[in-house]
Length: 162
Image (cartoon, rainbow, N blue to C red; front, side):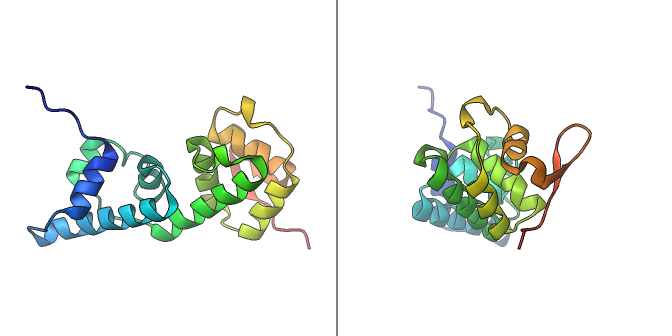
């Protein structure tokens, strides 16, 4: 009989619940425990949480099997906060949207200024319907409040106006 593949959530949950066998496994295990804590308190999809806090390819079973080496909980929780700020204006369906999370993550990496993010969301006047990439999301959100590369990627967000 063929064994059914486990989801990423099942893999992380199983790792968080199991007993440790060696010190090497300790880091990966503790990361899985933290991921489950954040997942259980925020109800964010585990795939988004590993993308935010572990790495862009961390949702892949191969990466999980090698073992997670780091988890940036502060970044993860801040990006979740940005997603919640965005969802208050644009609708609850965007709170756990992967595209919004990716865009908010990119904002965090470029600026991480919550006050400015709130200002951008407050002044935002665009439809999410046509946005397909994090690049488009950032362009729509930041508008002329950002500096762009020649290919249209946001590289700097202007400071808050006082």
